[in-house]
Amino acid sequence: MQESKQTYHHGSLRKSLLEAGESVLVEKGFKGFTLRECARRAGVSHAAPKHHFGGVTGFLTELAAIGFDRLTKELKSGIAKAKDLDGEFIATTQAYAKFAEQYPEHFRIMFRDDLLQVESQILVLASRKTFTELTNVILRQRGEAEITVDVFSDFPKFEDLINDIVIGWCHIHGFAHLMLEKQLPIVGKNMEKRIVKSSSTRLARLIQNDAATRKSD
Amino acid sequence: MQESKQTYHHGSLRKSLLEAGESVLVEKGFKGFTLRECARRAGVSHAAPKHHFGGVTGFLTELAAIGFDRLTKELKSGIAKAKDLDGEFIATTQAYAKFAEQYPEHFRIMFRDDLLQVESQILVLASRKTFTELTNVILRQRGEAEITVDVFSDFPKFEDLINDIVIGWCHIHGFAHLMLEKQLPIVGKNMEKRIVKSSSTRLARLIQNDAATRKSD
DNA sequence: GTTTAATTTTGACAATGTCAAGATTAAATT
DNA sequence: AATTTAATCTTGACATTGTCAAAATTAAAC
Image 1 (cartoon, each protein chain N blue to C red):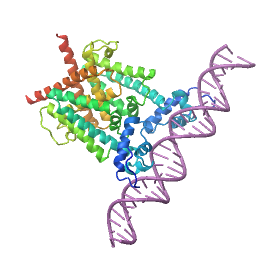
Image 2: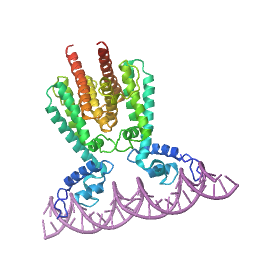
Image 3: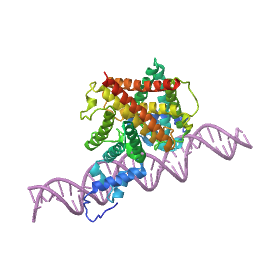
């Protein structure tokens, strides 16, 4: 961790701190995340992180953004492997849940309006990319082309689409969150896979069929 | 807050501390929740809470249990006002989301496996009641009688039912959670109500129809 | 080469959770 | 009723933390 530190100026302390911070978050969890521990792991003084992130909130905001980046990546790679429409929605649910399982502490801070600087550009950009990825999944389920406009801000024009996005995302997110916090008494990977597959398939069909119905009008 | 405190022994300090703790949680949020502040509000020494709750984790566990009790109550009362099957599912989604909005800090700690003593009897009992309430909603959607067995532990016998519970609960919970943490760009009560109504109705119909299809076999 | 700005350190402060030891009171026992 | 025992609460202490201001060190700008 602690690179060559001959100079007073570290050179890339920000990056080192982020790495250190991530290791703290992963190992000690949100509860054990302290600026001083991050500083220790990066091999710098206890007040160094303050200068780069403003405080613990700012630090967590950066880590949350990294989390969204990683989630987006996992979604993309999961989706790429899917063979058909049903499979794509299943893969999305699986990838989202897998991320929550692999990076539970990231997931926990990512969706915490009170712990983060929600106005942070880097966070907004990262989370928006995740959101775009999910929106595109829904659009493909509907057999529609990708769009770039902010559909939610044009209500009720896109009410149909917004509805599908909400239905899809709530399912995907709700499942991951409830599984992470051990609220769904689903035990074993086998049971989990079967439940994800059938529930996601049903939802995918619902969205696909409703879209088909609308077209035949 | 601070009752008659002539005696050295408070008499009902545990209860007073819980009230104080809840006020701290509501006012200062999870971040500002400290045992010492709770003690201050209850008018006792700083180490008093330790004796009753073991630590901050134990204290939060009790408050989370209270949260589940309240959520169960809100669900019941929301469901009671519904006029038909669709309305009942809509009411459930609304009540769940309303609770998250009214008690955001409760909601945030309730679903945090890492912050609570998950083995706590009081917490397990309270959360199980909420779960039972939601299960019953699904059973009614399916046109089935309430059952008392633990359906999840008997897999794959109850796979169909488990599937519906997962579909329903993920939607309900996912919506509330994403709304609370401002991830769903739904602005205004009007838009929210319309989205909840249509998305919940679609899901209710899905569950109802699938149940009907199964019966006609 | 000098000034200016950006990094990083040092030292300090109040606040917190936790612990051990003691004080006070209720409950149990005889 | 007296005494022992256990429960409840306080006090004082300790290490740890986030934050701040001032100083030290280096890079950048001019």
